[in-house]
Image 1 (tube, rainbow, N blue to C red):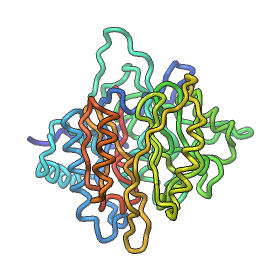
Image 2 (tube, one colour):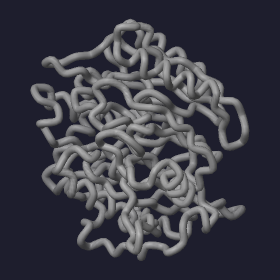
Image 3 (spheres, rainbow, N blue to C red):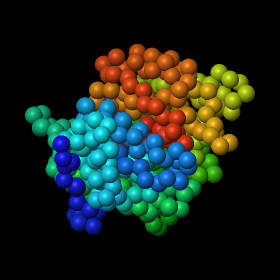
Length: 387
């Protein structure tokens, strides 16, 4: 089947003007990942230096992700140009992807971690009888809005400007209004830096994040805001009522503390937390400190948090570099949960635990030993667009 027409290039798209009110003022909220999706955003990988010596296998991992996703929802695939579109379409077709379920969106990018540069999405309550849409360019008035944070390459990599521009183009290509996330600093307004992998929400007003990422780490995104200012910004733009602060991210993580590598909501009041039993591993202390905080925590509805422990694979090292391999970097799609696997004895245990947590979805392992060399896996490579 031939690929769908490519969406407009950013230069041609007419972006709707940023709205002046905040999402909270408009009655929006950020849905949980398990709520219905219109689509999942991917970006075709092309930065070979992210996977030194292993890049050739990475596009096939993305093809496998797209194949599984296309069975239950649309895939919006960002490609750099017409040549990459042709390459991606051929590879996806060879892998059995339903190309009728794929929208090819042309935006030059630096990398392929859509979780972090594609906007977060918030929604308003849908009117009774209003039919949701999943078509590019026709989402206006659906009650879906984009929240565009500033993407600065995780305060680490200088080559991030094309990713930032690609993320900014998404709202125009969907024809949805965009909130430019800003905060007052003295007499000026500053764009807020944040990535989707830095946060996780339960859809009912509770958000998970780390102090290392937002407050006090070497790569802290908006340290001048402090805890109170950060919580206010998250409240304004994601309608968050309660922030659960964990201390820091896991070993091998180059983002400076992303929470989606080790702690995730599985349902309101229920958090999956990675567990490292090897006391000599640096992740043991990190994850036990997270456990201690979460055992004392209550969510935005006043519920005591229920913890489900997910094993960590054995430490994964390539060319002397510790990699952030974790089963917690799973992605919840409409009808399935995609889980990174690592040729590890714990693969089966992790898949079993998640299958029990998501009985109405198929839990599918995606081989990620090569993918994680890029310092991210399934959740990092995906961004949900809600209905």
